Length: 574
Image 1: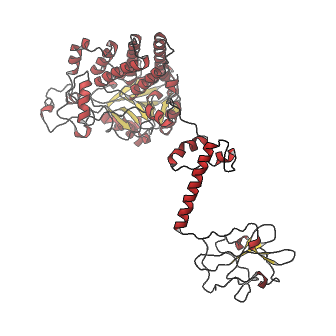
Image 2 (image 1 turned 30 degrees about the vertical axis):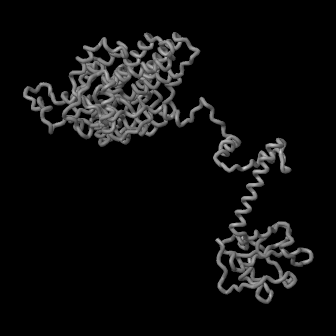
Image 3 (image 1 turned 120 degrees about the vertical axis):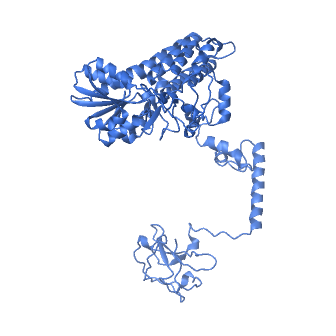
């Protein structure tokens, strides 16, 4: 910012060069003397007043170059802020020469009116148009311009949008080909589609028309969870059994797995994923490409119909969704040069490899990592029944580690009873309690081992309902919580609560209490003011988790995004 001239500065005409005194000494120059300084230092030895002398209030000095010449700038006011008057001092003779004779001086532009500027623009446009016509007649170039010069300065056309494409190509950006897709579309393709909101009536009606399983909406639906499917239970199995031979789109192997999902014979996430992939293997083995169709497109449609049927029987888990994405990626990579038998054999081999590497071998590696945290005298607590935690405990017992196990269980499934029987048969010392008594026994526990259905990128653990309560009580008692989970269950999604996405079980199950004769909730559905909610999963915040044990090692919850980024797409490349 240029400071305004002082109030006592007087505007005066510039004297001729011959009137300026020659004997004035020039002092040493510093950076603060430049006109670019915020507060320039004034030189007291050079003044210019009304009588032809230098004044310190109206002079600023600026060093030009090594030629020994200096520039004097005098603010004069008027319409413009400043006027530059240049003078130079010759080192040999001491004479002052006007700055108009210097080579670097530029004449000021004359002020023109708006009409004159418009006329000048019209003349320039006419000249450019004539030059363009001349270029068409003479390909070698016109108007005295060489070919490189014409390329460096292209003629500006009236339509500026047409010039954008050649400008982008000349700047080194590769041109977009027909088969190429931007990386944004590729990333969007990897993201699974959002789940259907069941409070949208139009979408629900369309889904009912396509569905194989006949669903009847429950009367006493919970308003907070209307976006999740709430159907009456008990009649789906009989309908599916009666229409077994009427559905040609669903393979018998997929039909069998769907019935097992519906009855609860296959419950755990790993077993459900393995059963689904093995059913897809049988679909691929029995598949034959119809005429005038490609294998990749038609087989993908077959897989989609099978996935829809399994989702109607029971909502898919996150690990199953990752496995389906893996399979579809393999199908999309099938080329036209491959024969049908080669493509089918390669798909079945890749499915076997996925099951072996991502589930079987991953579990063995997790057991090796987790067993190092078990020492003699430990009291281990686990919740429910996790096949991976069961393998860890049994392997530590085989290594002759002396420890005790506390099994915490909850209704309605009472999964921990099955784990209790297996551990007692192996000779382990066990304690069994329900979740409402966990705070009374937590002070004896040294470590907590938990399973997980999935782990999200923000470090939250998605597991059986009640897991969050166990982790919160352990955190209050300063007991470390170790979550054992395979990396194929990791997901890039972020979830902060158990409401937006969850699975609802049969509400009749929690209404019936085993061993009780007179149950007041036997006829609960007839009461319109009573709603029962049977949540399947809950979300444990990352603050309550000490460590996550994966096949890649033991990591904190904050490192989950690293696993998702580095190894999330690895299953597509195996």
